[in-house]
Length: 275
Image 1 (cartoon, rainbow, N blue to C red):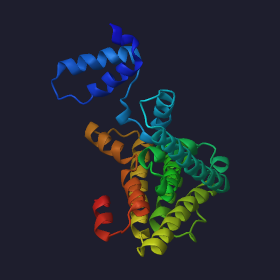
Image 2 (image 1 turned 180 degrees about the horizontal axis):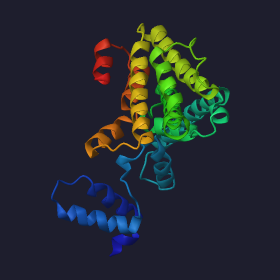
Image 3 (image 1 turned 60 degrees about the vertical axis):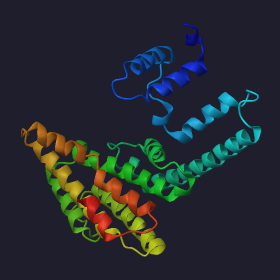
Image 4 (image 1 turned 30 degrees about the vertical axis):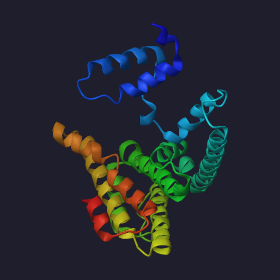
């Protein structure tokens, strides 16, 4: 077929195939045909819009009469400005991560700052939400580290003591913890206080009680999973699935996203998220 050599036509066909109604077999056939020639997995409206901007700019900049030159110039300017914001965010995060020292002190834990930032960008793309992106990146880094403490390194006795420290939420009562757990606790504690300070200063609302509760519930879950593993206990498939989706820390993610991005905060919204 002639269209198989028309990249732009294939792209348009592939994108349009995702907008059909259920049961439209012709759209499924169109998608299969286009995919076999394009070798693409996702339509552009399922991907990160900001990351797709450069591709569209490159596609259209050399084609006269297709795009208004002023519009193309604006697109390039917007792309460069957003890229600069992202680069600044990542530089600040790299400085924070280096000063935190977790990769050096907890060598067993995942060092995933860049991946965490990319994940945050995929959720919060607009440049004005810089603070929210940075908080989300920090949070994902810390969730990964704490998860590895429970899953990979800590003994049951240490994990019980760490969970008790999270439940107390008192930075002055850490002597019974090993050094690596003290560092991990303080990283969580200070990041939570940083966000609470921001919401008090900028929005007149103290979100710390809800952040504490989210971390406490998450660590209880991690301890329960570790106990099941260490004791060789069996669990039902339903319980496994229930633990599985909770172990990715959805409540903590939503709490931090809401606190960092919403213009106004309310107790009702936090209570709803914690459910």
